[in-house]
Image (cartoon, helix red, strand yellow):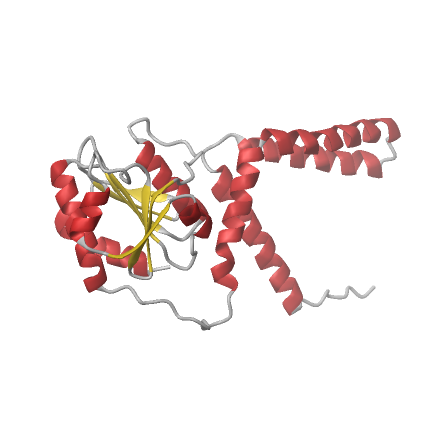
Length: 256
């Protein structure tokens, strides 16, 4: 008997990559929660259903089939936040699938454009003035900008500090920087649903939340400690030394 080999085509490779990518996105959403155990339980139940169906155990297979049908509806309701977050992550990855090149190239980040921002953050850190600053990259953050107040101004250290001054009308919320300009202020960011230390305040949770669903780099200045943090891809680096802030920020903005 001849055993033939199934040809491995380019379509098969693409199929494997897409499934792996979706599983990775699902892992990012559910990391640190009990959701993976529930998913494993569902997979085991599905495998049992296939086995009993193949063995013609009609009654048992019908019972498990009903449980799976009801379970899908229950999961949609139970994991609504995780599903929404998963879809947001998938949507925010659109830049990964663009054809090389852009019809309208965006301005490149330079040290000169970041100097006033870094200077303002250092001053606010010394004064323990809380701040939340979003550096937009490929994702334009249109919905985030629309829920704030349009500014459209040149980045200057004085303007950044004035916006986050405690009694200023725009200090509450996040500032959005896009294409080398202050685009908006007083913007509301999505707060992470991932488990984080209790010491993390609302600004740090919001910084992580936005970085989980977009490619933005988010700066945080703590009002309590004056510590400076940077969030990117759902990971936050805290208590960055002032002398290293320019280097760390530039590397974060320029790298994928």
